[in-house]
Length: 108
Length: 119
Image (cartoon, rainbow over all chains, first blue to last red; front, side, top):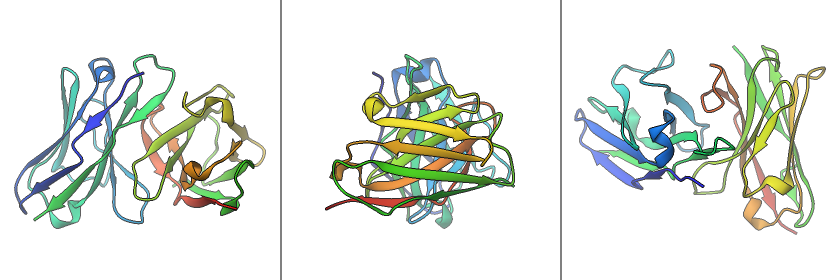
């Protein structure tokens, strides 16, 4: 079965740009969906499809894919962006869905 | 705005069956994928499975033989049953809805409910 691999932790200085990556063979076929989760809260959808944001998500969040790697970019990170971020997609077999292990983002 | 609320026992004994319900308000369960996701304490998200309102469903191969997901349009509820639970099934369980016609895009989530497996 397929897997989605994320770096466990990433840090960024306040106001700088950070890229969170997600690597997996299935991303050659399917887009990644990205979720943000803050402590004690349910995840929130931040990016889906090629590069779409739900209403209410700031435009500093963007998504992209190159080959088998999907990226979530935060341009001008804010303190409130400190959270865990998860990528999600279909397994190559399409029989089920998979999450990446998550990336803990620290804003310094 | 659709709202989802998970409910069920917070404590289940090992080898027994975990049963949870997701009650949907502010919208119908028809026309959407409904997904169960869990998160063990301090760990990442795990996709359990989903059901399309028509009854077609899929589940995580690692759980497949133990998972049943069903929907009740008359009650506007989605249910999860997980049999033969062990301590490894202790987690916060979330239900979520795809709002955009794709079974990986969850735009609405319940608040989650913690289920502890312990004797």
